[in-house]
Amino acid sequence: MQTRLSQDLLETPAGVEADGILRSCTHCGFCLATCPTYQELGDELDSPRGRIYLIKQLLEGSPAGAATRRHLDRCLTCHACEATCPSGVRYTRLADVGRELIERRAPRPLRERITRRLLRMVLPRRRLFAALLVPGRLLRSALPRRLRESIPVRRHPTPRWPVGNAQGPRVLMLEGCVQPALAPAINPRTARLLNAAGFAVIRTPSAGCCGAIDQHLAAPEAARARARRNIDAWWPEVENGVDAIVVNASGCGAHVLEYARLLADDPGYRSRAERVAALVREPVELLSDTGLPLAAAAAVPRRVVFQAPCTLQHVMRLGGRIEALLTRLGYELTASPEGHLCCGSAGTYSVLEPTLARQLRARKLDNLLADAPEAVVTANIGCLNHLAAASPLPVYHWVELVDSAPA
Image 1 (cartoon, one colour):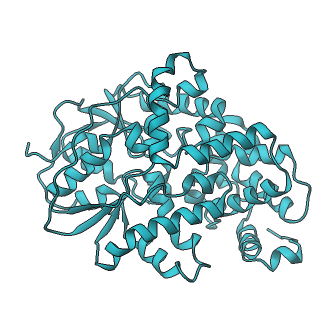
Image 2 (cartoon, rainbow, N blue to C red; image 1 turned 45 degrees about the horizontal axis):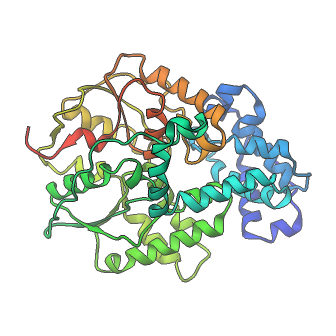
């Protein structure tokens, strides 16, 4: 693709990067077949190729308006196009540049600015979110549908954190911001499984939100600040030779993998960010090859369908790993047509784009339930919460289906 970016942009790192990404696009259209919003809406401007064209116009000085912003807002940042692109176009990075640019050039209406600011204030703060969730659950039935679906009913009783394993490889765990309140069983169960597999799990309470929420809402400086805070929280253990940083929400894991890129221009954090990113592991990477006598949990269905989160398959590139482990444990996995398409959760997307998010979820559930499973299984808290709000079947995180006791 030919470009004509202004000289002032080409003198900035972001401008040079964007110019290179634009030039790598050949307009082939392979991305259209894997883009959820294009599949749903049929509008070229709601496809990666169309959005690339819009961002190119912005970078070349065309006026920024509400229509352009709307098409960029509709992007789920699901990375499916990147996994398909034969030219290796780094579309997600280009989308970040476009969003940041249009936020500066065409400020949003006050109501939208307030909503986004509140999401960035509440969701990353674990204690504040948990405190607000209590009255939210009490008032859930009286809330508008858009908010009601974002507030799940209380899930299973929270198991105690295991006492710990002082021996064996040492791993850190990112506990996340909303997951401990929305699904409090996932982290303790993950720790229990890791302990049983011989890992010593180290908790770092000062590590918080990974920064993905800020990044996706065009607040890159805030995202980088959260990355630095987490690196500082983990660094003493990293220096002491910790073996991995376990992240059981694939959306967070995918973002922590980006720390090296996000802080590439920060001399105080660049090398540390690279080391942290290299330590990130999804629990299945540590558990599937341990030889531990894992077994299917006792109180859950055996015929299940696995919904592979976009970040798990397109960013972490772990497609098939969890399915293989569940099959090994005796679960019968049913088919999941269109497994590459996003469920519509996408971080704050289901709150900011509720109509399209519900359409995508309905399509996803139709596919997931087509082969008559008894439960839905996933690997990301956002997907779990979004699907559970409309699924007639229970929705589990995969660690809830695995027990460390012998069969």
